[in-house]
Image (cartoon, rainbow, N blue to C red; front, side, top):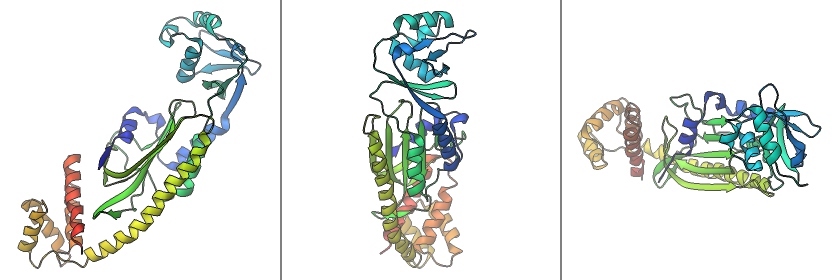
Length: 341
């Protein structure tokens, strides 16, 4: 089993302005951004510095004057072969002079992605853009039962999009199924950058728990896929579609088996009295004090069935503050389902 931290890393690097509370709101943002963005092709010499009112801007051929954000400014610096840190220390007029003397010449056009009066990115001819909304269209079509995990302590939602990239973390909270006698649910990460910050990629998995820091615990069947933004990048849409559809199909197959297991667990008893059940739970690593408390909760159901004991232990685990201990307790409870014949 693996511990997946990709979503947790995203959680702690994203500000409130990059968080979205639903897949629909993220989709609407990406759709609006796509609609408002324009690809412009110009040779390097047509990009001319135009310091205005102490701010550094550029004119792009006859298309007008544009500002640069942090990412596109860094790309312009790399294109000119100058240090971004150095240019940031001088005045707008001096920066303009630096670029006039260092910008490359040539006939090969540059690809500039603009939105309103700002340049989002600058690339050469080898770069092929894949828009976030194209990926989200597939998610909306095939992952209809998936949703973000619980909101994290700092307000992180698992759905993020900023100037440089997008990240999506979705799980199926009702998709629990049995794998080798234990309960797992499906989930996936999906990421992309329209401006060249990162590759497009996806990671699918089956997991047992997600903590409040969005760490995915005890993941199995982890599948990774990524593709650079080159000429054939749009072929990855078919692979993303295949991975999500495969995850859903396997969920449905496994869930049928899991439902049968739960049905048997609701009929199978662990013993005729509390002492007998306590001894059996001890063999499964359940402390006697915890077992006693669980039996009191389960007793209300009339019989010490496997399901009633697992349910009681799961509720008790939910009261544990430490995430690691809570996960261990959930695992011990879930392992009891293996006793179903």
